[in-house]
Image 1 (cartoon, helix red, strand yellow):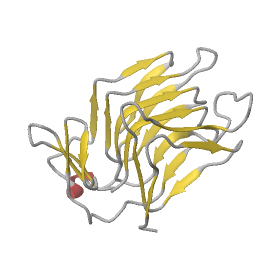
Image 2 (image 1 turned 45 degrees about the horizontal axis):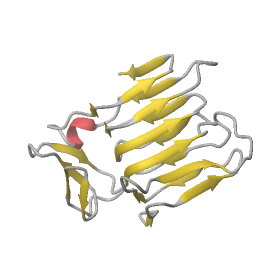
Image 3 (image 1 turned 30 degrees about the horizontal axis):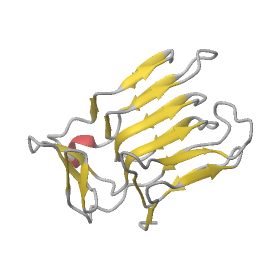
Image 4 (image 1 turned 60 degrees about the horizontal axis):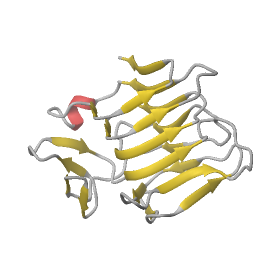
Length: 194
């Protein structure tokens, strides 16, 4: 717990059928514009949702402070501040930028934030998932991303389950922040449980 794994730009993570990544610390995935990080199945004939997903089980300590400006990182992300100096994220030191995630979601969501904190997600491509692309129980910031599924079965792009002691964590921050995203070929784009 409370350790950091960095996955460098250009890396492809191949997942076995049914396998998942469980994060109890920080997962730092800083892909680049022409050098995406990709999570996908190692199966030669993958089907939607053939591997589990990425599950965040505990919030990371608030030990890193930096900002995100014009889609360029400066240091480690824990607080995320846009050009207008609005606080977008407080909590996890995890971070995703320029990431492809294909064929995940066997056990539910492709990315699941179980704790009351989340990670900023920038320039994501998520496709061929089985049930939900993102399941969040706290903060969710998604920018410039694409979420798509096949039309063959019902899918939910984002499931936002708002509960917990949110206002004591960051009373001036919107819990859900979606900017310039393309969500298509899903039954339901956004599902709220409040």
